[in-house]
Image (tube, rainbow, N blue to C red; front, side):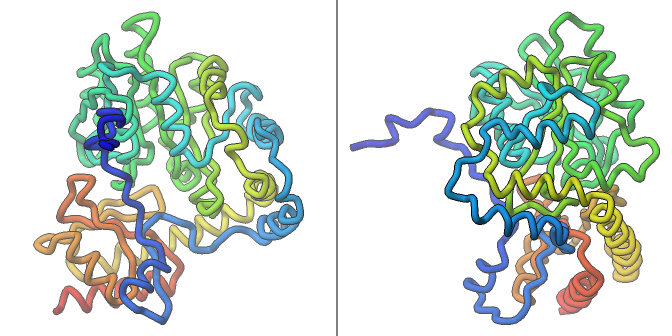
Length: 373
């Protein structure tokens, strides 16, 4: 039997997402028995708050029950927090699931999506999966070039993806830039393409005065979709919880095809606890990241490596003349996991998460060692 004949043509050359290497996998493959420093996936190495851990333990006794399918309490809490209506919020199993839902609801073969070069690769994957043309626009100073993205739009354009801040460059577009972009689209017709603004690192970027207040733009621009997550600053990456804030009609269509019970019972308990303890969690995480960035910037400059200043919790580092993949592999053998950037068309770069003080020190020590070899 030739199974290939039954497979959708879009799947034939579809490339699976390659996540940062997990700690246990590195230990198995390289036989490392000591501690591993993982700085590959932009996680919050402080971990979740004590209140979250307590909530997870409490929820454990109820895991024989299905969770509420609509994540009612989460949507209610997030609507209150952001100042939108209940029917303008949707939770997904990470922002990744919502990106796929957007593709399944709105994209047809022959449609176009617009993405930025060096932007989060999951946007392109959503277009590829649905048989769309993916129009990639070069960046300007490693930042989304919104005027250039606007210039390539046509009647086939269904979606524009903007990572703000962008992963992996750590750069961002200002509130003025975003609003000018949305206003320009609104003037072109009654049904402009959807603009998906991915704010996975929102809480880190808020320290920037020019960072957009995107939720305030929703009423004026109903084609705006905002994505945020609990994977980063809230340290719930292992539980998978992301959410969308958008026009109620957009949310309604996403809700129709959302898998039932997509947010587990334990995750729902954990998110509610995280929201109750967010001031402490965010304050601690921001302090660690800001101090860590200062240290890493200074050390990278001493080593002589270029980097891009970031508003997120990671740094994109130029490794030339060494390839980023070589740095990644050499650090891996030392028990330090970073992320090579080949899939982002940055072969002479690697991305490192800003970790705790001791993690940053180990990374710099081992980086110096491999560069001297």
